[in-house]
Amino acid sequence: MSPVVHGYPSTMQDDYQLTMGRLIRQSVRSFPDTEIVHRNSNGEWGRTTYRENFERIERGAAALAKLGVRVGDRVGVMDWNSLRHYELYWAVPAIGAVFTQLNLRLGDEDLLYVMEDTKASVVVVDETLVPMMEAIAKRAEHVKHWVILSDGKIDHNLPNAVYYEDLIAEAEPLDEWPNMSEDSAFAAGYTTGTTGRPKGVFYSHRSQFLHAYAFINGLNVTPFDVVMPITPMFHVLTWGTIQAAVLAGAKLVLPGQFSADTLGDITGALTDEGVTVTNGVPAIFSPMLQVLKSKGIEDLTGLRLLCGGTEPPLSMITEYKDAFNAEVVHAYGASETSPLVSVNRITPAMREHLTEEEIRAYGSKQGRIPVNVEMKIVDGVGNEVPADGKTEGEMLIKGPWITASYHGMSDEEMADKFVDGYWRSGDVATIDENAFIKITDRLKDVIKSGGEWISSIDMENAMVGHPKVNQAAVVGLEHPKWDERPFMLLVLLEGEEITKEEVDEHLLKQFAKWQLPEQFMVVDEIPATSVGKIDKKVIRSQYEDLYTDQG
Image 1 (cartoon, rainbow, N blue to C red):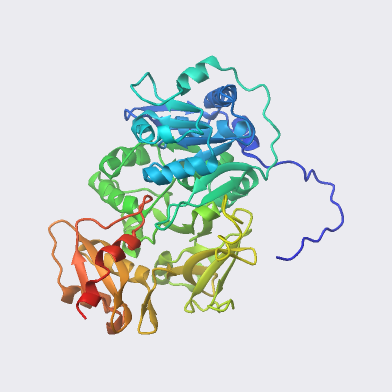
Image 2 (cartoon, rainbow, N blue to C red):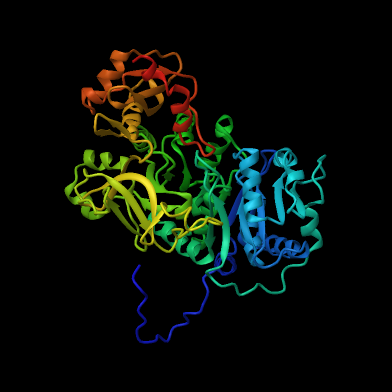
């Protein structure tokens, strides 16, 4: 990386620190009456405002300090998308501690590893999740206090446990907020990959402040918007939606605990509260589409659904637009990138020379890299590929909200994960003349067949466009002749059946005959990771001998 060159001194207040404490205090000052609508564990909705809730944030911070939490300490939090979780987003960094996200979808061993790696001295947990913590509490010897989020007393076996509401009731608001350095860690998150232990990423105050501005710019968030985070608040800070909404002064809707079975409640809030910005993965937005249709909703103009995790099918993007005039905004990111790396928004210049059909086709791309993030796509020897939308390479990324290392890992352990200051994404991508990137596969998932590459992602999305198919997963399996060959799992719509001839006929519209999967299988459910991504490691393991056994 090039050395920093210092020019003539400025007269600006360059030592003014960009911190989460300043963000929340100044937003409360500027937007005191902005609403926060929230749903509790009983499914009941409530309302408050930025100003009303701020006193609870200050009391929560003071209560944690009274428990012995000091500057730099890590505080683990395991909760749903609740009002209390929102309060802790601010109360923990208010006293200089590190808000540590505990992903409730991790297994016991990985969860315990995260708590041990951060050495969390206090762990805050929702009452519905206490049994998960009881299973590992005896081994979490570094945890001095367990704090239970509930409206009343519950039966539990957690040692040294106290209740959050009791702590707040007894605490006085903070006398003074520390003037934290902006390069201090504000929050910690852990990757949810399918190999090895989760890797720790510690986000600085500065990184999240700047990331919030990028989010606002990418989604055009203003005080007139209503933001509802559907992505879990325990995973990559729900993609920065909380910080961005508060920075913009937008109304917040916090849906609490929900699942695919309770999407009716969430879609009700979507329409009743006039939500204009939300986020999630295709596995949520697809069934939500059907729920909205069943409710007879006809117009959701202004709604932007930020969609990530996996590539949304073009058919879903088109259907949201045609049925509701809602915009599915494809985005790309990772735990290591806070996560916003790119957002798919068509520019005025592009509209001048692209047809409506071409604009819709752009929906399958991950979008343009925002200002303040550097990205390059390189071939196998490190040379940048041309911006022709065809030549593939690995995407490398650096910038103020991109991690430069992993917590607690040695240089040797990280040697293959960073290069020349860039984080190696492990994603295979192209870039076109409009600076839009397209993820074609993961390096580990691209199918290498007879010396050629086949994109598993493109094949999955093509197959989801079939009228009988609900979900598709494609992996490369070892083959005695061709190195690897594609294998496909399909989840069909209720009551449907499909033949190999139908699969081939559909895929031949986009793929050459030699690229087609030799076999497929219809299943009830496709294995998924803790954050809803297709778990291709599990699929490869389950079917690894399919082609080799057949010779």
